[in-house]
Amino acid sequence: MKKYDYLIVGAGLFGSVFACEAAKKGRTCLVIDKRTHIGGNVYTENIEGINVHKYGAHIFHTNDKKIWNYVHQFAEFNRYTNSPIANYNGELYNLPFNMNTFHQLWGVNTPAEAKEIIEKQKAQSGITNPCNLEEQAIMLVGKDIYEKLVKGYTEKQWGQKATELPSFIIKRLPVRFIYDNNYFNDRYQGIPEGGYTGMIEKMLKDADVELGIDYFARKDELDARAYKVLFTGMIDEYFGYKFGELEYRSLEFDTSVLDVDNYQGNAVVNYTEYEVPYTRIIEHKHFENSAANEGCNKTVITKEYPKKWSKSDEPYYPVNNDRNTEIYMKYKELADKENNVIFGGRLAEYKYYDMHNVIASALDCAERELG
Image 1 (cartoon, rainbow, N blue to C red):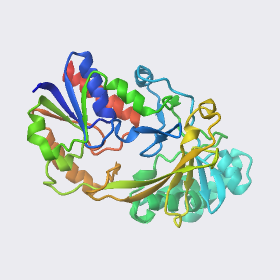
Image 2 (cartoon, rainbow, N blue to C red; image 1 turned 90 degrees about the horizontal axis):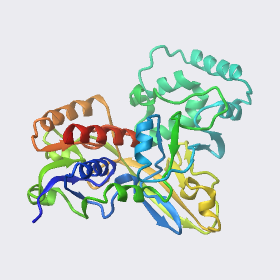
Image 3 (cartoon, helix red, strand yellow; image 1 turned 90 degrees about the vertical axis):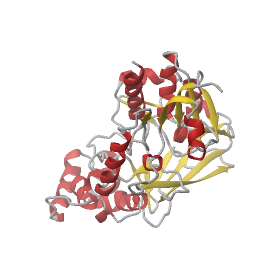
Image 4 (cartoon, one colour; image 1 turned 45 degrees about the vertical axis):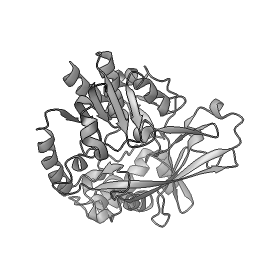
């Protein structure tokens, strides 16, 4: 049986970038994944001619020209600009919070008018030292925006009351006193034409890939097939939950094909009241340039439901509170002592990563490892 230089556990972005860089250095890689497809959470599937983001909306954005140029080796990117809409009890508001939002809420036309209302609401709150997410949000955007556009959405997303969540979660909440609906401040933004799967395929073109493989069910056998392992799964699972389980939030997706050409007029609509059980509806065709969908009289929508994670669920993002950080650091201490195992990516590092961060981290890892 062929002996590989690296066994890469996980065919997501981190593992795929590392496999690509290893191949450039003449190293051999076996990439495995428990799912039956490559790409991890950025996987896109063509349904009715529409590239569907199977695990939620993924919009690539970065200020790093090096990373932007890197991904262009593998795909052409369109000019998609993320401009989500918030729906609160049938009232529609632009996101991120900007002058359009303030005009829709209060009828104001100038930044001075908007700032006056927000400052008045902040003063009325009596908050001086925010101790939780609710207080932090009110200090950023005032009570009206918090109650209509932040509170319900956030409590659904995290499965906890806003008063029980740490303030740091929302400190980067974008607030702009200009008429600008572009959610990201990053210079570069877009989505690969044809979806992310084709981009990952090109990254993995020189690696051997085996799918539907449970690493832990065959760990000894798989480890023996390579001189070194790159592990991108859950770090607590790798060490048999020795110090306890880390917490994650999970998601459920309800995807439907509809016999209409345009369901909601926007790629992403957030539902911010708590009583609606899903956080957003994604209409996938709006991620593409209009020409790509010309003549398509169907559409595909996905409702996204947050849920508490259990071992039978996919872990989508970590719950980075003090308890989990303390547990993670114990696992990291063990990981640092593993001579022939590299830990990388969102789950192995127990860290929320945007896509450009994952790629940058994988490139750094490859440079350290491969020289």
